Image (cartoon, rainbow, N blue to C red; front, side):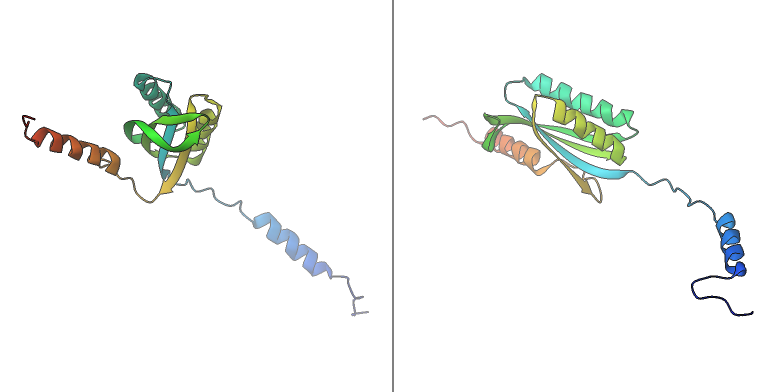
Amino acid sequence: MGRETPGRRGENHRIRRTFRHRTRRPPSRKKEPMALYEHVVISRQDISPQQAEALNDTLKALVEAGGGTVAKIEYWGLRNLTYRIKKNRKGHYSLLAIDAPADAVKEMERQLSINEDVLRYLTVRVDELDLELSPILARRDRDRERRDDAPQGAF
């Protein structure tokens, strides 16, 4: 009589399991800190630099609406592409340094994929934001200084 049939559990196991299930707490949802991203956008050569800047402003508004901030926006200008993208040989490049939740970045990328003026975009998660001048703009400024310092020769 004290022996149970194989495969059957005793009454104590059921009671213990029920008691343990009732006292379990739901997992606590910790608020994750916002991630840091660098985002590069290449837009069509047909648009004006003002329209490219307006695109940057709309991206900034999208990120801020999602609860993030844009620490830096750099417009790199019209640059040659290495290879043709959607029949374009040039594109307006922009770099954004973003501190935002993943949902805001995902929504921004969704909007960019819909926009016909955008050729490509790339978002990279980084450990810390680099708020200094990017190497591309630093080189451009260095080249301008060299041209200004060069003597105006009489040829």
